[in-house]
Image (cartoon, rainbow, N blue to C red; front, side, top):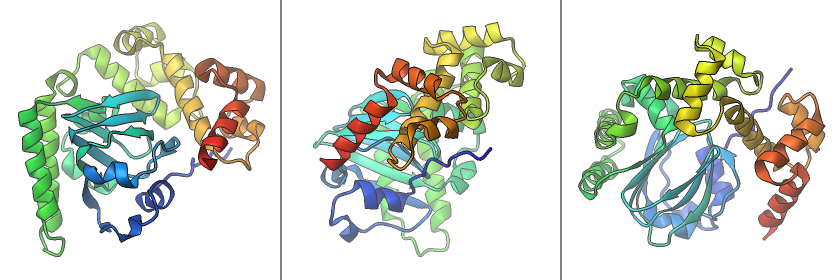
Length: 298
């Protein structure tokens, strides 16, 4: 069976679809590492955006203002001195942007992540615990690194190495400033993080908790206890939420009927898909599509 690619949005497509006319005149940077001031966000981005699957990684540093961002199934309120990391392949939507927002947006190509995150575990922790609040002093330090990134010439032979070093410093300072969530987690948190990573890899083919427990070499009961303790949700609900969130992306395409969306997501019974969708969203798939089309036309 073939599976959908969920129409991933690369950075150029984001500019075309979700930024206002005239944005092309802004000095966008065609490179593996890009940095922009967040002060332009409320002026140029057409919020709210629909849920989309990003084909790039980005880091948001808020020195002022904030807004609301959906990351996968979580609605995140952002304020001054918050940092948010979104990893390629994950779903997100910009719900609102405070006009007073300032800070930096940093784009990072996935090929560079192993050089920036020398510890794979740290990358995974930042992926599944994406929001972090830092002190004003830490944010001032992070801003200095961002300013250096902005000033770095892109024609120098060592430019990318210098940029990678600065980004590595930003990540390590963030980990140091957020010890509760980015330092080595306890066993329950570690199991939960690994479970969530597996769900994103396999949710299209595997919907049973047993598969994930077997892959992690733990019992289903132990997996349930760990995930429920850390997230206040059972593992099965996490699996279903990921599937339904991805269905929202497919439902944005009016050429796909709802039965086809269910089959694309490997639901053998479209009626069950409809019931599950309503249970988790309080809307039927048809109602969701209608509200999306109405919002898009406004």
